[in-house]
Length: 51
Image (cartoon, rainbow, N blue to C red):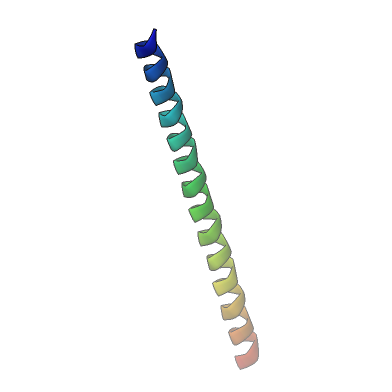
């Protein structure tokens, strides 16, 4: 029926949104780690320069 079709589409959309959200969170963490590594690298260079 039309009603169950609409429900299925809504469920599918929700799952897609949740998957996109998970990917976004994952990307945010990856960027954060990259940033921390870059910062740590800069700090290391500065320390070596001082030494």
